[in-house]
Image (tube, rainbow, N blue to C red; front, side, top):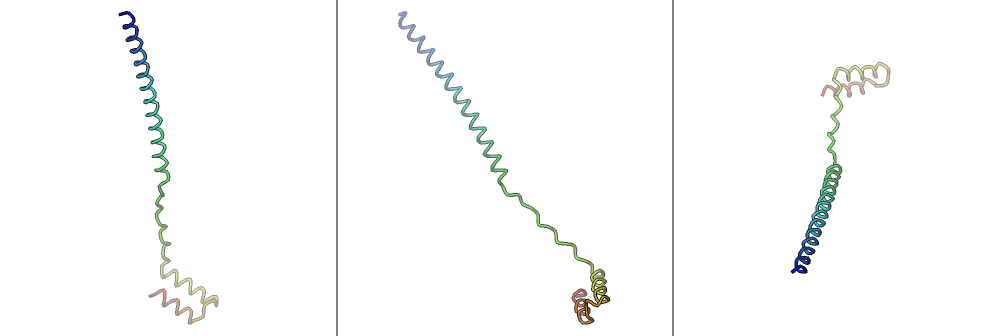
Length: 93
């Protein structure tokens, strides 16, 4: 009987050690997997394209300012009377 008890005790000690080691390895692997998952998730999130809003159209210059500008060009001799009248018609619609 003493040999049988010794064999059972040895088996229990080996099984307990194996179980403890296996649990430690599983916990460590789970921790690594979780870190890898979080890293991949953060990289995927970082790689998603950022949508940039389109730049607003430049504000349309009011008709009065446009008329003043082409009148100044006409006064300087840059525009002829015909060119001035054509631009004026465009501005006024």
